[in-house]
Image (tube, rainbow, N blue to C red; front, side, top):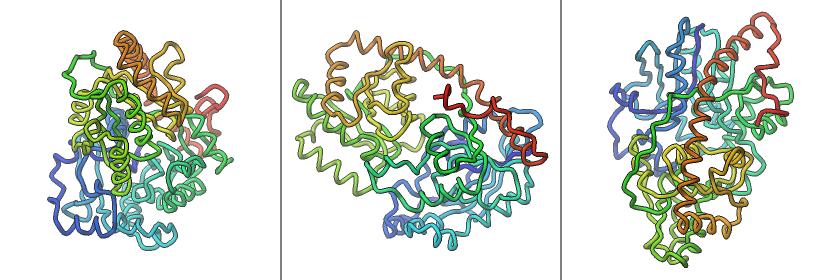
Length: 433
């Protein structure tokens, strides 16, 4: 089986291939001119789940894997290399990234050159199936629309066209229309939550929606105590209202009334506009000595080492089913406070593992933070329960890889010979959550 995986990701294994140019003042000027997020052009780790997927697929006998995707600051327009039997094909995407500021799907699609680049690579490979990891980044996902000669499968990391999104930020029209185009052009999708299933089915009722999850990358290491510098941490790739960052600051102001020296470390990226608003909020609440803003880290391992310097995590995400940072916090042994979403109650299904506040209830969020500060025994119980729950979930996800391979085979058979998709591979909204 020959598989093309379209994915936007970066990690140290890719950086070590020496395929990137050094940063330049001109490039940074263009980033500022186009008012792109500061992380654009920075060679930081992102989308670690893609490496987990690649690590699983590269070990499968009889599977030839080609990974294609966009990168910024490549030394050449097209960079190709092989690593542990996997063939990588990266194409430069500066122009398409800058054009995102048009925020107009039709115009952007006409002007961007990377779809045609992707088609040439895919046609040269001539795969049995083309798999897209995530539809919500146009610069990456546009490639799947140029692979219409082949069976296609989109793994939905989220569903951007969520009516609730407008409650927390102005939705990006380009991303909305890009996702809609993918949903209308493809037939096969994978989701891991009922929320995403319902959203997708509302837009594409005739879609085949598979139950999927990214393969596990191994067992958890036992918890090791680390020196603490902060009380709470809130970390995210991009902070803002939908991540509940303002809520965590407002809750800290309530906690400060009892613990004047309480600290909150906000780690990660942020748009210039949101950062100004967050700092103004900090100042208005007299929290300038309590809140620390820490930029994101190039290496994921460095990020985790820094996050572990906090005693607790407060991650009041409002839109995510379950954010990856929640799972990561529990795996690092940080007692966790979250908002209730469609997914967070599952953490406490067997035993109490996290403290859950009503979405938007800053007072309840603060009270849960105070519980962790005042009651070390409670915090330790949550910490241990959450870690054990994550170990159990990780063991379960070790089966995700085999399920994904079965999805690939079923989709190929469906496209080639019309073989019906087996019901047991599809997401069942009655029992799957």
